Amino acid sequence: MSDLLPQLDGLLADWKTRIGMLASEDELREARLSLFGKKEGKLSQILRNLSSVSPEERPLIGKKANEVKEDLERLLEERIEQFQKKSLHARLEQEWVDFSLPGDKMPDGRLHPLTQTLRDVREIFHGLGFQSVQGPEIETDYYNFEALNIPPDHPSRDMWDSFYIGDKTLLRTHTSPVQIRVMEAQKPPLRVISSGKCYRRDAIDATHSFQFHQLEGFMVDLGISFADLKGVLSTFARETFGKARKVRFMPSYFPFTEPSVEMLIDCFNCADRTLSERCKICGDGKWLEILGAGMIHPFLMNVVKCPPEYTGFAFGMGIERIAMLKYGIDDIRLFYENDERFLRQF
Ligand code: FA5
Image (cartoon, rainbow, N blue to C red; front, side, top):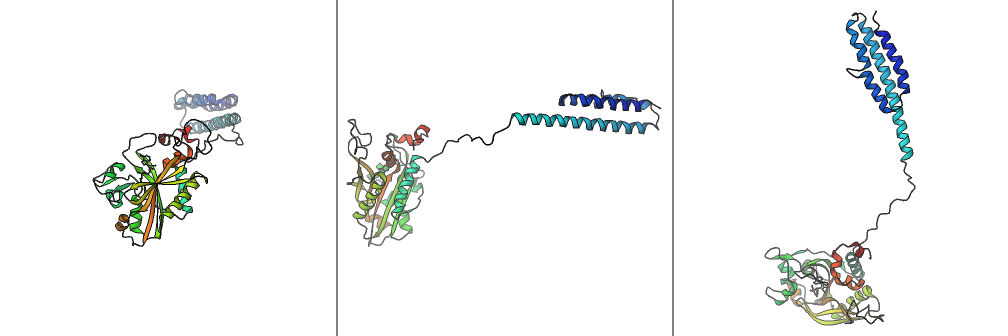
C-alpha cells in the first residue's frame, strides 16, 4: 500500500487551514500556483510518484487527487470571491456619488443675432399676410440679371460684381431673382418674402462682406400703388425700430423698379441723446438708410407675362444692416468671427 493517499489527505487538511488564514486575493492566487502549478505545484510533486504505485491502486489515488484538487480549488475560489466582494464594497463606500447634488451647468446656447433679426423681420411680414419662399443660392445669369432688366454690359452690373461658377451661373448677388421665379410659377394676388445668403465680390470693411443676408419682399395685386409700399414698409420700420420712428423715402435707382426709392428712418440713437460726441449709429446724419424698394418695373411684368391690370411693389434689405442698426453694432465682421464675448450679449 503506497503512502500517497495519506499524503493527499495531509495536503488537503494542511491547506484547508492555510487557505483560511491567507489575507489577500494576491496571496490566494499565489497559493493556487504553489498547489497546482504544473512543475513545482505540491499536488504535481505528490503525483510524480504515481509510477511507483501498483496498477490496482492507481485509479484510487487518481480519484483522490481529483477530489483534493476540486476541494481546494473551491475553497480558493470562495475566498477569492470574498476578498473581491470586500474590496468592491470598500470602493463603493469610498467612491459613492451623491445623485441628489445639482449637475454642472451647461452654458446656454442662443440664437446668432443675425438669425434672431431674420426671424423677427420675417414674423412682422408674416403678420402682414406675406408668405415665405426660398430661392436658390446658385443662380443663372438670366434670373439674377437679365430678367431683372439688367442686360449684359449694362453699367448697373458693376454694382453687383459677382462670383461666377460657370459662363452663365453665379452665386446670387441679391434675392431679387426670387421675384421672377415666383411670378413665373404663380398668378397674383401675391404677398411673398424670401431671405437668404447673397454673395458679392466686395472688399471686406466695417459695412461690407463678400457673403451677407438679404430679405426680399413683394406684393402684386389689382390696384397696388406707392401708398401700399409706404404703408407696409413704414409698419415694418416702426415694428422693428420703435413706434416713434419717422420714415422718409428718397428717390433712388434700381433697374427692376420704377420709381425706385430708398427708405430711411430717423436715428433712434439720437432721439434722447444729450451727449456731445458724434452719434455712433448715424454719425449725426440723423437719417439711416434701411432698404431699397420701388414699384415693380413693367419690364418684369412682361417677362413673367403678368396681366396688365396688375401692379406691385418690391423691396430688399440687408439683414446685417438691420441687425447693426437695431443693436448698435459698428462692424459687420463681428457677426462672422464667432467670438463668444460678442455673441453672448444677444
Ligand atoms: C439690392 O440688392 C436690390 N436687389 C434691393 C431691391 C429689391 C431694390 C427689390 C428694389 C426692389 P442693394 O445692392 O442696395 O440692392 O443691396 C441691398 C442691401 O443689401 C444693402 O442696403 C445692404 O444692406 C446689403 N448689402 C449689399 N451689399 C452688401 C455687402 N457686401 N455686405 C453686406 N451687406 C450688403
